[in-house]
Length: 312
Image (cartoon, rainbow, N blue to C red; front, side, top):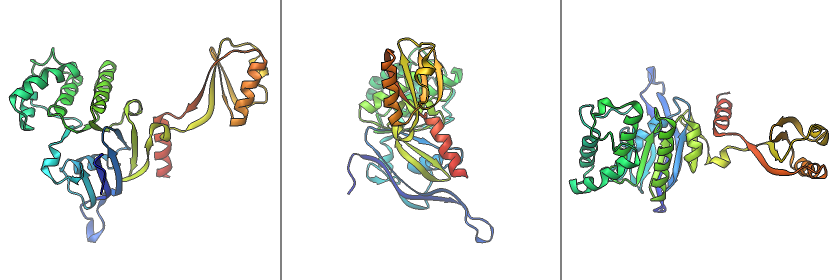
């Protein structure tokens, strides 16, 4: 029996679209996919175009039928309509009613989710403040910029206080200030115990906000783990010094590789043993070490390496 803390679970999930000529197999969008997402996690779904991300999201929302395997939300089949009422969704490239104001749209969507007017009167002002749209709430949606449309779309995904929110490219078209606001909103949802499932091509945003990440390609999971697990150390270290003497290269002679002198210190490729020796030499030379940082691959670099390796 699965823990009640598991919000989303798929096991052996497979989706095949169509059949080819003369009995040839169709397109395998998902290939025996298995993953779990716990309550209150911010989970990132990454992959190149055609990886199967959209198919997975549509199966979870009951928009596409699986071919094989299991897909569950809150321990029940995704085919259960009552379970889907506990889910909020912001699709990529969403189309909201252009003739409504932002306020009217939220009222409409809230009622469609089964919430009464009293609940919505209390809920909507708070949401508008969260997404920075209170001043534009009385304007028609057709007057909104792309970023404003994305913000009001995020509000509609949260209108009924869902326990799971699925966000498809949530910061698409949003300016840097707006992206920071979205990150804070996601953090607030996490703090409230809401599970957030993010599908995004903006890897820098995913790296800043997600607890765990899955990288997919060709319908399969290539890697899954925390950001730290997916962005290994490169073996390169940044040393911050109080001052950088002109004879620094001589002090470090014979240690490591690819020395790069910087205004605040230097970077150097080092083994674990060489790291200790480097610190000893700097101290023996009377140099003050302000900080040492191990360089890691960022998520984009790790993603590109993994996908390229899979394509070989």
